[in-house]
Image (tube, rainbow, N blue to C red; front, side, top):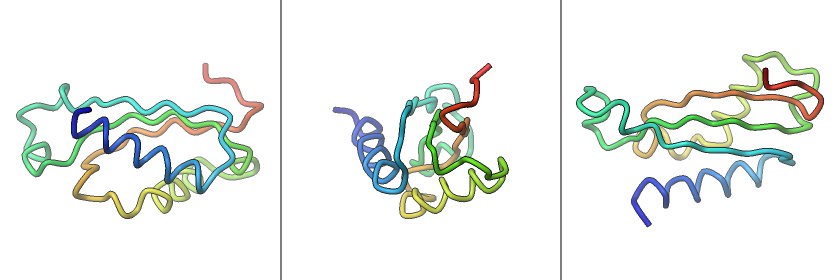
Length: 94
């Protein structure tokens, strides 16, 4: 496993502990940011698509805050940048 695959496994474990997930996809987009100043610190760039019942009634900002709280221990060393797509089970991803 690569270092970022190991990181993704840890992110997934923390998110599964925090939320009752019906969907979770974590993509490593670090290669798209090679040479970026932030990438030099060793933190990766990731894209997260997550679907959880806990997001029902929450604003987009509140959902992002909840996700950042669940992944807090990984910033800034393992995660430099995070793109978040957060949905409830009834919301469309379109």
